[in-house]
Amino acid sequence: MLADRLGAPPPGRAVAWLAVDDGSGLALASINAGDPTLGHVEMLAVRPEARRRGLGTALLRAAEERLAALGAERVRLGGNPPCYAWPGIDVRYTPAICLAQRSGYSQSDTACNMTADLTLPSDGEAVDEARLAAAGVKVLPAGDDTAGWVRAIWGDVWAYEVDQARDRADAGCYVAVRDGEILGFASYGANRPSWFGPMGTAPAAEGLGVGRVLLRRCLADQRAGGHATAQIGWAGPIGFYAKAVSARIERIFWIYTKSL
Image 1 (cartoon, rainbow, N blue to C red):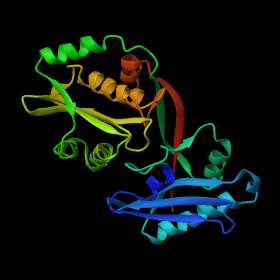
Image 2 (image 1 turned 30 degrees about the vertical axis):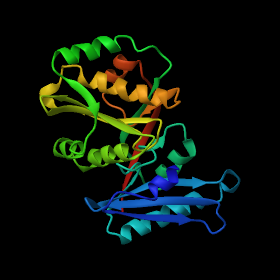
Image 3 (image 1 turned 45 degrees about the vertical axis):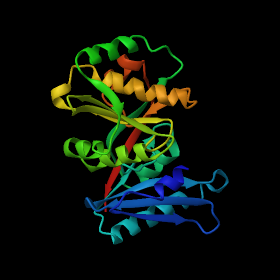
Image 4 (image 1 turned 180 degrees about the horizontal axis):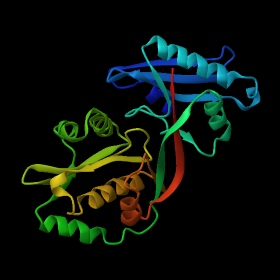
């Protein structure tokens, strides 16, 4: 399913799948029209029995050449949102980090995923919702106007994910509304059914507790869908998720970049 989603990217993205003839390895390279100078290597995998034969190096070099032909001046080893596998290289994947370093890449950023345990009780959830209702705020399923509102504040990447979440049976999106005005949104399942995000609150509504209620609504749907945990991808702010739903950092990713 992940490969299918990566193989059906948003408009304006060029994608190239590269594979070893015998099927022992593959790579996925992509580049966006929004920044045609930055290419991404989103996936690189070699079967265990075929490792230590230089296939990873060859696939990475081929991906760089393909991206350079498309106009890339820099290459990033990491996710190309809004349609991506992982933010970067998991720090536990030592061979991948060694490959990046010996291929001339430098660490340019760090990202993390957090995990929310959906089996924990949601203390204060009813109180929070009642407080919002008393302030005239309603929490509703996202409507047709949500993506446009998100785009105006946070850009095309999050707007695309909102549309994806609304279109899929195993995903969803909620908004907080007061007097017909959207104050915030939260979505889940845009990349994978067990993943939460993105989420955002309008600057004028910060401090109302909108984000906490929207987050819990989405996690409740994921729990009802049979998930025991939810993965908060490319998480931030960490403190908010830790306090709101006792989420914990589970995976750390290093993002590497190289000038061609």
